Image (tube, rainbow, N blue to C red; front, side, top):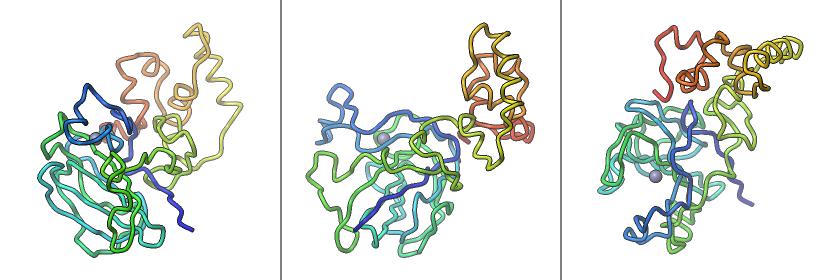
Length: 238
Ligand SMILES: [Zn+2]
């Protein structure tokens, strides 16, 4: 019995375009019913990680998708595809482990309008060939139900598409409910509403000042990286 279990391929998670959407016939012109993968925000040079163990089927350049890596899990009969890459750090037939760096994100290929990672998932048959190439998505299926952990293995369950702040920046640390309650009450007084998980975590686990968290123009920063990371010069989606 085959089982598909995936880690996220990027560190900071923001879905730009989910699977299956069909913008004004764009995919129809490409012979598909809709978008055949998930687009993750990922800036030029952003590290891309293997979503599972497997062997490299392809690493190189594709006419339409730009630079591409494909990883095949022959035991569980599926493969994952990583498109529009800047470069690749793995070679054909190489074995990779889940979480290994496989390349960096960019904007290569024909059908892309900005830096992002297009992530695809296909069921396979012998040799890593696609099982249902005529399914209307070039054999791709929606990867969304199969993500269960962050790029570094932190369990995130069904909330895989939430920010790093929501997941306490993937920190495996014990929660301090008393401290969280105190912060939440203080924030509620300032906000005149209850703060959400992301906002509380940004203060408790991210080390951000409440002022920063209350500033909407700083959301992209604190929701994805900690204050420490920011002070070290890190930027989200990079
Ligand atoms: Zn895409």
